[in-house]
Length: 336
Image (cartoon, rainbow, N blue to C red; front, side, top):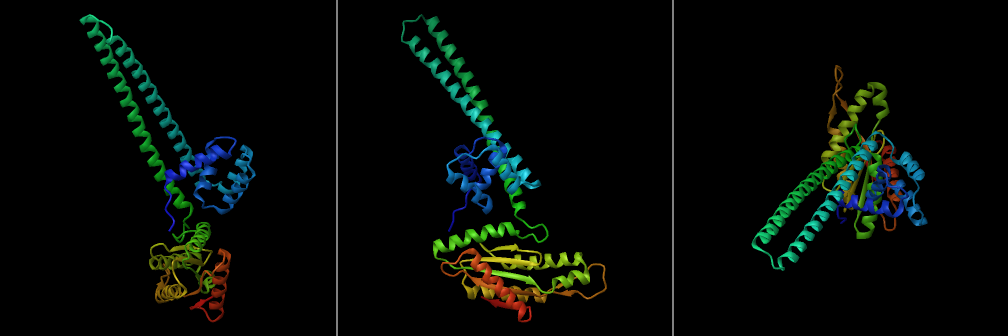
């Protein structure tokens, strides 16, 4: 089982990668390498892996192009701003640590001077004066260190707050707004990762593809407002039916996908048929209309990863099974 990576681990890795492979160190540069460190956006990762393999540093112009191509957008700009704030806070922490080191060094020098004086024959008055001076210097050094510690605590709190905000924004980036499920981008990344994990750990992995029957007819006859309600209705049913490490996503307009790690074909088929029956029994009310509530059904395709199969393989077989369920009359489950 893959160990979750903390935001702090990702941040450190991003800084390390940026230092090793980038020509410039801007917030935008950091954002690009932070995304690479997360290993979620597969095309971006492949692009940067080519840079790493070439042994050349990523230029500023190339960084701008990669950012514009893979990461530009309102939410990504928010992420970039938050990450830049984290970098600035880390710089502040580094400066505070440097000041603490300087203060400690100065006080160590004062102590050496006091020691040198103390071993010399001194009058009581001179000795008392030396003790007074070193005591005052100790107090000043303590005050300075207390201020540095306060700055470090504030910086740590700011980093933690920004990491929470960043995690929230990243969640929004990968959530489909209408359904509340993961979006296609997050599904593609999860599929690749879970296939690799299943192969590495010799564990089963199953995939369910779900398609709403006659959804175009729903939109044509009842309008897109009801169509959106149907999407939300099916999404809620899927969310309530998947547990634990299962990943549910809106795969397309009226199509959904569920990844079931450590699940054999029989178990996945059971989950799929349960989903089909739950959705079949429920009704979608049409607001401000006297017509009867709408009955919805879904067709489902199921496949389990085969030995040596890639992500495209299990996805293709699940899609073929879904097509077979449609062909056989809809409102049923077909297995590849």
